[in-house]
Amino acid sequence: MKSIKLLITIIITGTLLSSCSTVDDNYQVSLEQVVTDYDLWYVDYHRTTGSGDIPYVSRAFTLSFVNGILYANNNIVDIGRTGNGFGIVVGTYNTYNGELETDHDIDGANDFEVTVLSNNEIKLYNYRQNVTYYLIGYQVSQFDYDKLFYENIEYFLQEYIAWEKISTKGGLTNAFDNENYLAFTPKNITTFYSSQEGVGTKVDYSIWDYVGAYEIFDINGFEDIKDLTLYYDNGDTEEFKLDVINDRTIALYNYESGKTYEFSGIGYLEFKKSENSKTSAKDIVRNDGRKRTKVIRETKERRNLK
Image 1 (cartoon, rainbow, N blue to C red):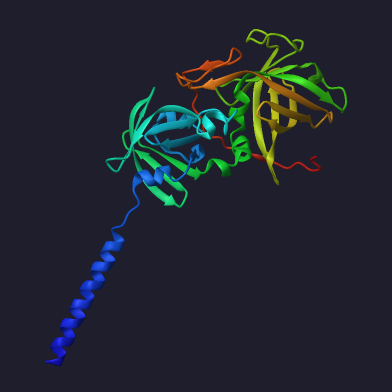
Image 2 (cartoon, rainbow, N blue to C red):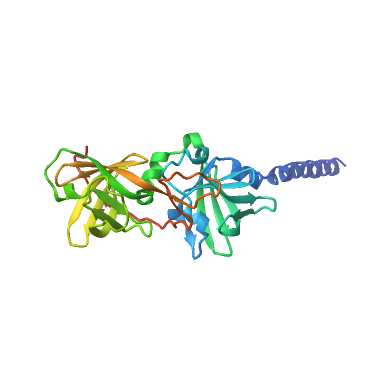
């Protein structure tokens, strides 16, 4: 009799504990809570996998999901200020059916399966296009803008029609002294143009004296500076240390001559303009946008950098 009572007690206790465990295991955070937990989701495009493409995601540096409204930062210039850090409105979204359903103003409807990878990292998978994007979450107040600049500096250089030389300091006389304008085409991340036109010239695409390829290198031991090498079609090569002073000014230090040149961006290009955004007369807008490509950089050794 005692053994039967003990067996019944064990069964009842086991059932109760099993029931409690089942309730805990079934608890899930809602998809809406996941995507809205962070102000910004940085699109880590270099990790993208798959054979397809969702243009608006490939174009964006960050995405934000706020009360059904989809925001994107498609430009590095003024990121953190445009739309109070969220960027421009590019569409709508909902999470009602357990999937992230988006409706982009230009690209239309796209649905994503969302997988939580860590506390601040998710991946978005679109089965129609067979593409997976990796997103890292940040609050606006904690977003590392310097890291964004330098990880995507090729795109930053493209966001002005041209870069105009505004100062020259120190060093020896160099052939580059005569070049007053540089441009980095948004068509790719490899082509540059250079001009000897006098400072103050109205910039258009007919003034260019030189064309060539360029490459940006990481520098071992430095995260906040890069190496810019210009390969002119005539066979000349110029190598510079590249510093971003602010979102409109860069400094190029010529390794050979020891001279530093500062350039200011002119003719800001906004990619994928919102219909309601205001554009000043100096701005040129490209509504068709641009697509990011995977950047694989080589690393150089540079000693005695200032």
